Amino acid sequence: MVNDAGAASKLLDCGYFVQAAGLLRDLAEIGMLSLHFSNVPQDITLWRSLNGRKQACKFGPQALRKKPHLKDCSKLSYLDARFRLFSEYGAHPSTTSIVAHHDGVRFHIGPHFNEYLYVNTYRDLADLTWHVTDACGDAFHAIFRIAVADILPAETQRFSLAWKGIAPAKPEDMESRLGP
Image (cartoon, rainbow, N blue to C red; front, side, top):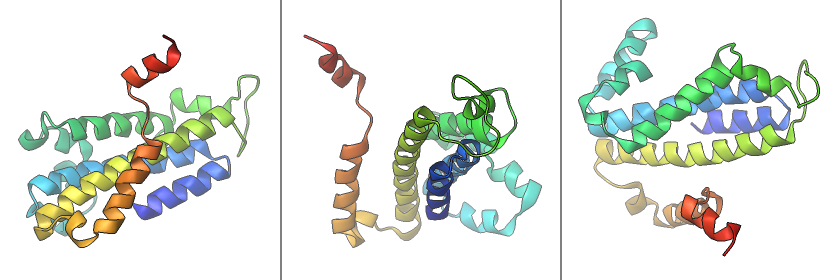
């Protein structure tokens, strides 16, 4: 997770938006897998014993969406929506990914700066990283039977305070800013 977030920020800073989105897709998948392990921690052993197609069939996003314990999970819904978005935008060639090469006037080949994509993708990265960290904390608790907050209280408090600084505004908050 740390490597994906760090690499995505480096790619964004260099103007590689599609490639950064591919890493955000990977982050969302890590979160989805963490949610599964938070419910069925014993599956980690099976997951580690599989690879390639067998691992993807048993633990890939398509399989995780069908797990009964994740069916109505709002955390999974959030992560799955991001997984699908960034799969379309950054993991596979698509008409959606073309937007990352166009600045409203012309197409760019190679890295370039697009302020709109830069700011919005960084926001997505921050938001997604917070949600994936939360899912990983759930998995940690299920596996080790201790909450991250119990062993790292100061760090957890800083994490929560930082989230309040980057969290997207709630719709009702936006309405109050738009006028009386």
